[in-house]
Each structure stands twice: as structure tokens, then as C-alpha cells.
Length: 102
Image 1 (cartoon, helix red, strand yellow):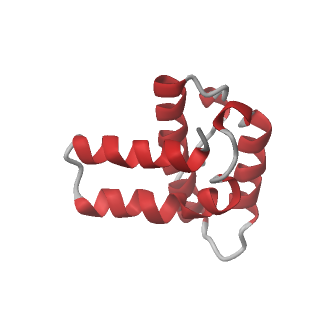
Image 2: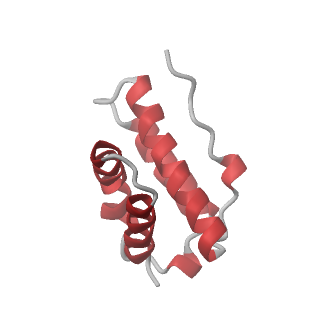
């Protein structure tokens, strides 16, 4: 199973929770950069190193203000949390720190 397949399961689970269409769209938009980089990555091989690399990528984006970076990271953390709980992904969620909003 790859990260794209986990993402599809995550979105399905959010739909099953009857989240608003806007919330689902937010997950789709905000997780798109992650999927572009790691969608084909085997979930069993996804680790803290990839998590750190993705967080560094988001943090380095000059076109995003601090609040936007926090939003990307918050949505990413929710997805990773689901992956760990549902599929045993080997990532330490506690290491994903969402920056404080301004």
C-alpha cells in the first residue's frame, strides 16, 4: 500500500464522519503537496525522515505566511495520526509540531 492509497482511505473516512464539503476540500488542497512528493512511497517505508523532509519543505515555502504553514502542518498531522492509528505507520506523531498561529 502506498501513501496515495492511505490518503484515499483517509478522505473516505472523513466523508463517513459527515465532515463538511469545505473541510474535505481543505484536506484535498492542503495535502496535495505531500501527495505530489510522497504519493507513490510505500507506506511501510515511510518514516520520520520523510516526515521531517516534508515539514522542512513546508517551512521553507516563502510564498506562505506563518498561519498558512500552520494550516498545512495541522492537516498533515491529522492525516499522519490517522495513518498511525489505522495502519500502524511508523511515524512519531508527537514530533510533528504545529506552529502557533499569529
